[in-house]
Length: 111
Image (cartoon, rainbow, N blue to C red):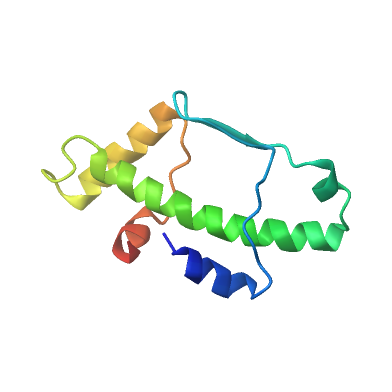
């Protein structure tokens, strides 16, 4: 994951951490949601989209790292060919209700 300094470099010098009410995570069930406050919802569409695009990029990066971790945590991940491990992993993702990236092999090379 990018450091705070790296993240701030992407958004500019005026960026500051938000005490964001409306960001929820249940660490026991793995559920999460976002319900932004009225101030965000009432901002211009352009501003909301810019902010959401920035968040989405950061969330995509976090998701990639998590999906690679899940792949490496899959039982027998180091005992078979890559093709077999990917097939096993896709089956695991399906059973967990997790969308498995089509480019998983490329993702593993990058991470």
